[in-house]
Length: 634
Image (tube, rainbow, N blue to C red; front, side, top):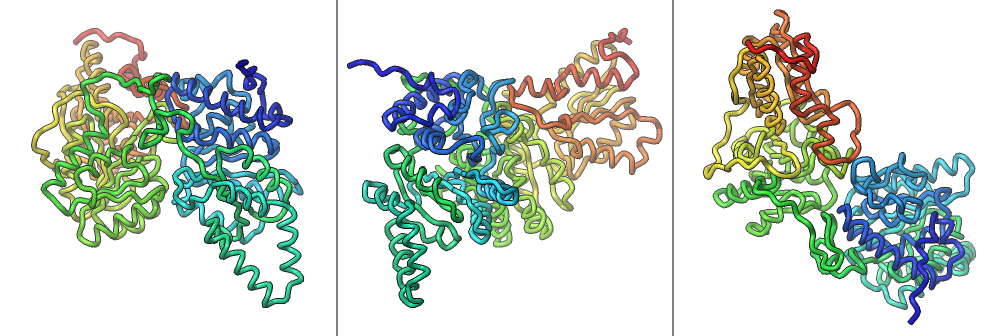
């Protein structure tokens, strides 16, 4: 058998897909799947979601005219095939690498990414905005939002659909149902019916019937149609929201996808929802066989699917949290855990193995997760609401109104604190210290190593009269031994780690290791340096801070967070206490006032100016010396 001539090499932009036959599109889709698998095996990243939309991506770019037609991918982690087809194939093996392509859609990266995304459930709202902007400008282009069934668990998606249905603006929403969670009939009859109801003839007849049938008969016909769609096609909910529903259809069958997309493209009335059923990991057996469908992977061997794991003796912070919580829960049956669609990402899958009835995955619904936890706390339970720093932002009003204002003891384990590497700015945990620390009564902690984290889990459990949060980074700890008995810390008390006389380094979080390196360098330069671990950003250890200010010439705060956080709290306290009046030199070291692009965490912290050499330079300049100057030993 002759080997087909490769076609993907001929696709430099979506325009090269326009006049292709279905047979050619199928070949391109097969080559696109192979290219995606090979690229991600080199870089790591999100794999299963992209493999699930190979045919859909190919069909969309064949039928529609991006970037004139606006194509929005919800979350954006499934857009690697889209990037390959939109002129970025030559850079696809730079995904998530420093200076390379983003792992999500990004406006500054390409005109084919009209809306940046990495958090879920934003596509329909943004799409409606684009649609109304087009209508106000007298345009005629199409707007397509592709949203997964997981993202449809967030209320924002329904808020947008309700608004879109009421406005009747032309918008195409594609529901990528990759869990078969809404409907199962995706065979030939379903495809035939979907093609029928998406076509001009049916829709013209529908309009004519609604205009000329007698009132009673018209209502009977409408009810019959809704009943048929609700039972056989599963679309009653979307029709009630004002969308014309089509589906479900097989998202891997180009014979079905292409004609339906063309039918929808050629219509011009109101919002439409196309229900497409796909399979995460499609076409790659190791991904199809995995429970999480290879959602996120490290580098891997294409032949076997085996992922390359870094060797280390230090435990992951996430695992330390989960094991500590599980250990405490063995003795306290009031402990419950909540996650917002991230059981494995937060480590709570380990908790679930031991206590399956005491963990609640609420889906991509952070607002609900927080208020649900508040209700559990008010009901006498001890909820640990584990949400990444970047995602907790989505539930901030609920943290304020439903938790803090009522003084409810909800515990917030905050994973992915600080910079997160390859996921970049969209997932960085930069702001939680500031936005939580300003809330009355909130206790805010940050661990300096894995042993401190384990004890902070116990500390949060012991706080039963107000909310608390403890933050920890992604990745490995430093290899310290975790105590067998998890004793809580005294609230609002830090610790002295190293005594000195001239410079004081006050660290909040895991920059403590860098602070210790900096102290050693400063000592060698004749500048005696103290190091303290704050542990708490709120309440602050006033006694410790005043001692450092009183006994040292320079005080430097160091944190893995944005301006307005721990350093600002310390500075505010010292100013109010009059400790700055004697001429204390104080410097606050934070993340820079920018959104940092993805890279390795080490390089990102180097760019941020939060490594040991930057701490030394800050101390030197505070003393009025050149950053590179060597001080004679005392």
